[in-house]
Image 1: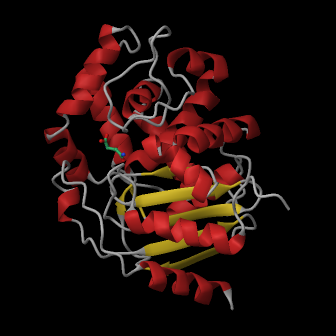
Image 2 (image 1 turned 180 degrees about the horizontal axis):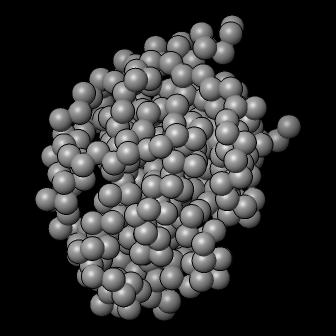
Length: 299
Ligand code: GLN
């Protein structure tokens, strides 16, 4: 079967499950159409395939985290970033109010505590330009989603106050959260996400524009933390069943990067208890078993 037909068939078989819930803690996300479903794939020669609700635009949310991490690594180097944010899976939910015992750092850059800290190493314009370079087009913030999340951001404020109290960030906690939530509010579609994931899978070179966005070691570092921490407290489950570096977001997006092969993305807004897209996870499980994507599969 031609690839687009195969991808459509994957969507059809995963489309029936209406389990999971919208991310109601962000009022604007609770308004999303829960039935939308899309899937995209970007090969490293720059060819993109997308099926389903490919016109749907949604906020990038936590899928922004590996890309912001990559930009911070590129700007500050590995040592400076690792001094502030660790690389250990926390086994906790994305919004856990916790720091590593001993080092006093956030566990990793994929949970909110780590992502708010990473964001404090960047500025809004660097994030805008960097994310746009990964996507290969000018991305824009959805101000409604940004405003909506800021109205209910007490938990992230609590995390940011904890970070400043422990000297992890110097910035005003409210400004730190505002910047981080802005980073989460960039609008994307599945094709953007597939291309962004493919850039990491391609060692930092954007496969459509040909631009080197980050160095090879930066892409490897971002993929490493996606592998161990990208799916939060479901990271082990994900890695055993799907077996590729990945990142989810509470608006229902999900990316996977297969090094040297391509970038994948899915979008479906209903979430499981970990905050990962229910149908997105199913789409990836199906792709992984059909295409033998697990990176630890013996040849
Ligand atoms: N902006 C969201 C938050 O901080 C992102 C969380 C996510 O996508 N898991 O709560």
